[in-house]
Length: 260
Image 1 (cartoon, helix red, strand yellow):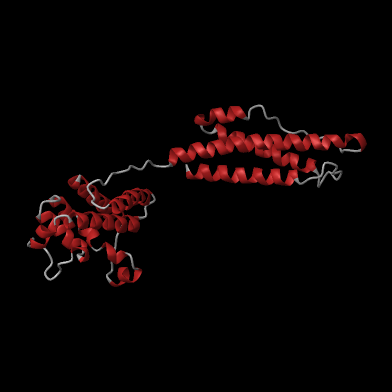
Image 2 (cartoon, rainbow, N blue to C red; image 1 turned 90 degrees about the vertical axis):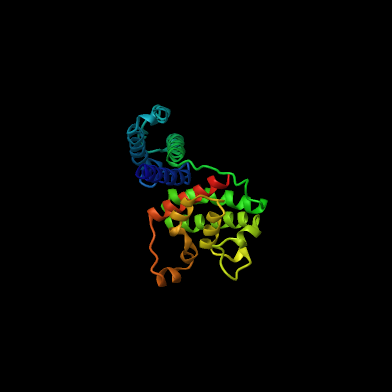
């Protein structure tokens, strides 16, 4: 699909350049080699290439039918005297034909882009206490999916880790007394907003706010903050890829399910 889109874009740009060059020609150009007649072979070639391109896929039959009536441009005699009008007719025929070809290619590009764009899902985070935070998490969830589709594994892990941390922190702040009294609460840290993700997960599991699966699967995202800075990534010899990104997203889904 990407190769076809690239080929369509190349052909589209060539046609745009052809139109631009032909439009600049004066109607009384009498030099055949530099006049409108010199663009006839190029237009005819592009007409044939566009037809071949659209005929390669049965789904493009409607677009192919839309350009079926376009005829190749025939070279006219060298314009002299009253024949100068033929130059203008040739010019208009090329521009009209190229315009129809451009429309067909643009239609192909739009339909192909829609087909190749993966569908992303939305999730509501109604259990989050802060309306401002809720809006940010809903926005970031869409971005996480787009990053996953684009194979941007580091972005998936960082955004998933940040989202999980924000959800659990908001959850524990609503149950602050129980959180601070938990056996797995970090010693000497009474400010829950300064807990790291591992602490938030451990306490949330202990209080049965989320299931054990979060604790078992969460190791790839516990140190997600270290991925933000390339220096930490090098010093800690951190490695990640598709599997870690899948796990990070799965943990986020589990947290969302448990909190909903």
